[in-house]
Amino acid sequence: MTCQEYLSRLHAYFSLELPAEPAAEVEQHARQCPPCGELMARARELSCRDFVEFLNDYLDATLPAPRQEVFERHLQICSDCTHYLDSYRKTMRMTALELTQGVELPPVPEELIQAILAARRKDP
Amino acid sequence: MRSYANPADLLEGLRQGDADAFEALVREHIGPLRAVARRLLGNIEDADDAVQDAFVSTLQAVRRFEGRSQLFTWLHRITVNACLMKLRSRKRSPDSVPCRHESELMPRFTRGNTFLEHQVAWTEAPETPALRDELRTVVRDAIGRLPENSRIALLLRDIEGLSNEEVATALGITVNAAKIRIHRARQALRTLLIPWMTPASPP
Image (cartoon, rainbow over all chains, first blue to last red; front, side):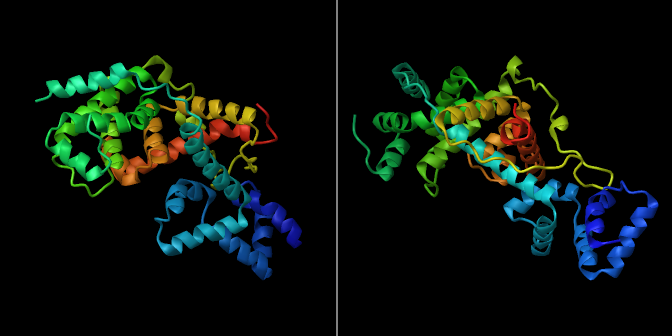
């Protein structure tokens, strides 16, 4: 198996979609080729599901430091999680932006202010 | 009416029960607080009720306010709490029924815990005013479609700027439950925005 074939099958391998024989070939290549073996070791450190589940902790930087580094290493090898993280951040940014900017509130009616001032007078 | 340029004088006036001080407080801060209440409650009538409750609450609370935080931060927190009280007391309005169950909006994974759907890069937010207006409507509409529990947690964290711990306290749930609620809401919202943010699938 060439490195290119290995790379093209790696996602299917981790998704448990490869039949036994090609899966064994992928593993064999990883044992024989140090860079490809390193890639597999990294991919085993963290699943995409776990990346997404703890994404908010990663962004809040509340994970233990070694775990935080595992997340960063995962991002270096996983385009799905990289794109997911980027879209998650953009969602947060848009939420903040679209709800706070360009909001035209009608002027506060004087009756509301007077009602509040009257409520104070009733409050002992 | 006396003017209160110095916040310390205003605070002292409030503690003394001075009517002018209270009026100055109301006039200065009601605008932004009303905006907060409207975001959380969705309509101006409930927002006005909550703002009124909030200002009346300050009359009692000012005796306990130690002045360590900014006056506005303190008012903001009281307003948020007044809104949460209002939410608890009112019946679920028909338009807050989500059109899809939140769990359907979560990302899906393979048996091997990789993404089931290939993730693609999002475009940058549009620059032109017309598209920005459209996006604003889309974002607000999407937020409005979230289940109320999720929506409130999201608004408190990402708009009102409360910490996870503060959201938990405000909602009377554990910090972990608050974090999960916020995270799920962001993920659901993200899914609702996909059609507008990916070039491959125009809405």
